[in-house]
Length: 231
Ligand SMILES: [Zn+2]
Image (cartoon, rainbow, N blue to C red):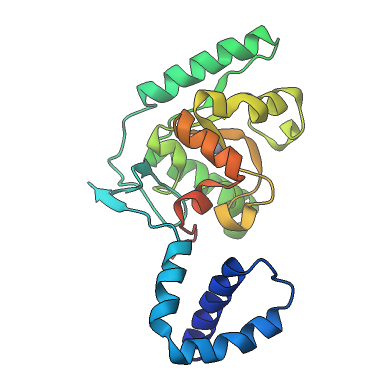
């Protein structure tokens, strides 16, 4: 019950802060919200709805698509049998990007593209044995939860933490959206994506989506309105 009230109040706060340009005093917003909610809840609801983007979710053969975009993270898994290699579009986009990078004297190669359920299972087990499960979960996906299994993700070049801030990673960050890729686990979004910053892990989403996400400054979970947590 208490939780419900909190949710309702925060929804009201959202409504209020969007409706008025002055949003400096949270306390007064709560006070003024109370009578409004008692008298005309029917007025509040459409305003709240207008704020939240409505996403369409489809599950086809155990694979989840939100707004037509395949999602795999700690919440959404892939079936064990999903085993198709890198998609043609992903590979073509990567090759085009690598050509452009080469012109800027930046070599880009695929360190790791598609990984099957079995390969991921082995990898995750090794990492867990080495660093413990809790630590492994921050940088490696459990089998069935890896984006590499989708055929849409690529680890570029060395794919390790020594690459943070390096020239090739900077190039990637600046240009990858032009080829339809996003830096899937951006810095500052760790608590949302569920993973450490990985400048080398790119995900193909198509040019339009990649550019839109960059413009909005959001990670895929934010863009699609989902979480990333093992349940
Ligand atoms: Zn990766």
